[in-house]
Image (cartoon, rainbow, N blue to C red; front, side, top):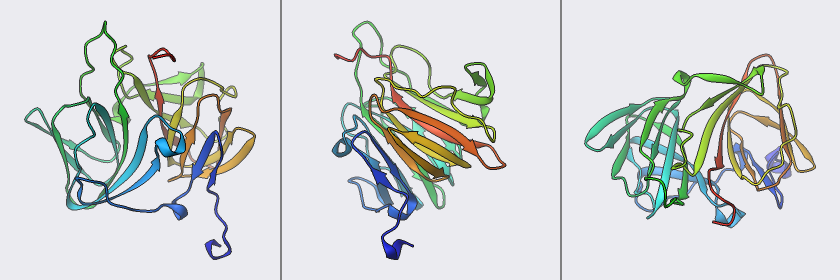
Length: 246
């Protein structure tokens, strides 16, 4: 169908849905044995960058830009993280948050893919800098969203004021949905990890599937309902813990 100019991808003023058939790969400075797909960036109006790094065996991440925090979530394969002289193995659904200026290396063992989110860190005068976090998403305790046991949230980063962003994994049982249409000041970057359903973005309703990427600008109306016979999960980023005037 792509030969007829068809795609589910859509870019609007307050949101975008980006599907794998439209992904374009390109190198990023400092990466070796890797190409990247930049999904979300300031050129889209976002205050952060989100990209998929696709690495060959032995592929290596480049350094994060100055004053920038980095969150890495392994989608496929295995990465070795060297942090403060310690080695950590990040397998599928493993993740790491790396504060600004923290020296680290990320090297693939075999072919690997990792979703990466980078943001210029906004410090608070009354707080220390955030600490590095290494974890496995599926081992994080989940809680029901608004008391709805069919929608579970796993909070991957500490809910501490030193963190200026949040990253959560959300899982919906078939037929479950968000309990409201959300409209708020935070912006989002979302990666569909499993399953699919319908996402309302602005005044549009989209079918979404595993591998899709969504950007939601501040105040974009948003709602999700899961479809199919298996659970649906997504990874979602938002800016957090900061006054809008800062």
